[in-house]
Length: 194
Image 1 (cartoon, one colour):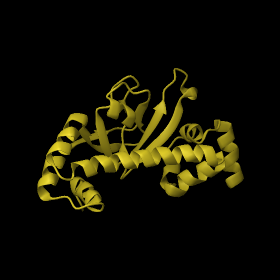
Image 2: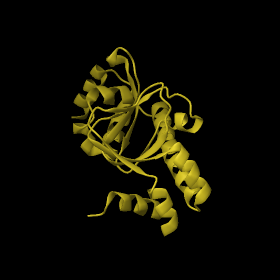
Image 3: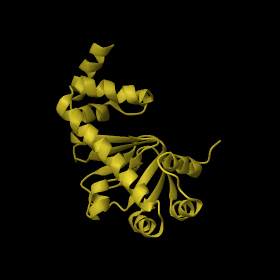
């Protein structure tokens, strides 16, 4: 079975070759962390200090509210994706939202400071940073376009076409918030589809 770090290296190598010395420099700074389901690992008001790669699990990005039903879920990150409160990471200012696991999750993370060192000391560093930034931007852009151009039913179908196993992992209250409908509206969509 392929090791978790080797999986990350293969992922990077799939985009551009990484030398052994650059890989050693980068991978020595990665920290593996396991989170139980329903763990908030970045709270609103905290500064995001890491970019992480999801090895296993699902992460929800959401705007908290004292009334749980009014929380706004605006993103999910899955296995083989980068996750971060990226605007907070870039500016090193407080985050306006939270990151929470929806399943037992394994992440490999690099800190802001360590990533700056990788940029300075490796030939591949800027590519790694750019790759993470491009993937995070792509996900954000797709989400915005989806909200502008698709119906809630299309957003629901697209979410589960891309990740069919998630029906059993993501609570429907988060799905309804993500696609922009009430739980009752989601229930009607699901009835129409089945």
